Image 1 (tube, rainbow, N blue to C red):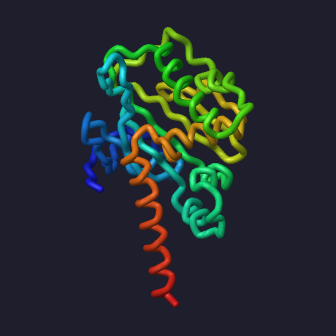
Image 2 (cartoon, rainbow, N blue to C red):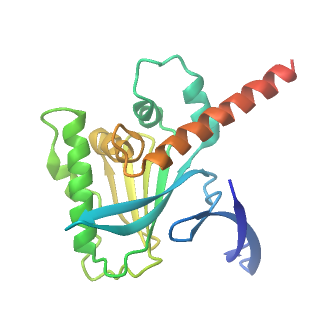
Length: 224
C-alpha cells in the first residue's frame, strides 16, 4: 500500500481547529486520495474505479474506497462458515462496511446516479434470488434531490450498518437510513460478489483481509 499524507482540519475537545497529517492511499487512474482510516475507526481495505460503458465508450464515473472494521472482520474470517459466501458472512455478521465514492465524471447528475444505482443494484438483487423487490433500489438515495450538485470531488458514502441498515450520505449529509437485508446484501455484492464493479478492488479486499488475519494468527502463536 503506497501511503501519502494530506492536511485536513478537525475540531479538538476545546473546539479549536488543529491541522493533522492524515495518511492516504491514492487511486492510481484518477489520482483520488482516500484516508487510510475513517473517523469511526474503519480502515481502508481496497480502492477501485467505477466505469460505465456507453455507446462503446468507457466512462470513469467515480473512484471508491472500501472500509471495514478490521477487528470484527478478522473474527468473521476465523469463524467456521466456509459454506457461506464471504460477502454474506460480512453482511450477516454486522461488521459494517463503508464504501466512499468520489465523483470523477464531470457531468454527473443525481438522476444519472439514481439510474446507475438502479441498474447495478437491480441486477444484484435479481442475482441473489427470485422474487426480490426491485423497488428497494429507489430507497438508497432517499431524500437526495436532483438539485444537489455533483461536481468532481463530491463524495457519496454508503454504509451497511449492523442490523441490515443502509445509511447514505451525499456530500456529508445523511439522505437516507433504511433497513433491508436484501438491499444490504445486494449493495455489498456489487463490490465483493461474483461480478464486482472492480475485480481488482474485490481481490485486494480479500487479499488484505486474509493477510491481516495471517499476521494476527502469527502474532498470537509467537506470544504463546
